[in-house]
Image (cartoon, rainbow, N blue to C red):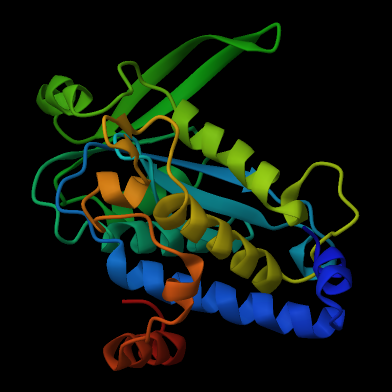
Length: 268
């Protein structure tokens, strides 16, 4: 729903609803920054989505990363598509890999800023980075050419056995882009609720990310006990969470100190 629709439904001022959404988005980001740490990863797919906002958000793009096997949404960043912003997002993704000790396959398209950002942030880690160049015909992908940019090719088959992506592609994270357009009115192709600030888009997508990863069961993660959320599949939680209990979660002081240091000195 748009901010105006929420305000009409609840009988509140749109500015009040805007403040609620901004605070909820910041809280959801803090919760996921603290808890989204995986012990074992297979493949990470990364892509970006044009937001088409207005004013400051007119040229904004939403970077997203997904762990394919668990469908866990690792991170989202709304910013302009530059080398610096791509590098900042890759540092956010690298933070989710701190506890991982095995090799990880990272797949992206051939956007020009990915390779220098990957070499700066991920080279030297146990990472195999490949770029995919799909060829389209009649609105469908005819075939895709994959190129390993860095990392040993000898572990590729082992990594593909630990993921649902048997051929090089970015289809899982592109499907996530459709979820963004479906669940967030600010990034739909035809919408009257155009975002004017990058912070508004970021907070809205953080809320969608929280519901996607921790609250709503995923249709492809089915077991005999029922559908599971991506966070359950990744071993981060034991049951689907509720939004209210996440909003009641107390942000640890160490996280606040780290964020203030990053704001003062930049990301580590």
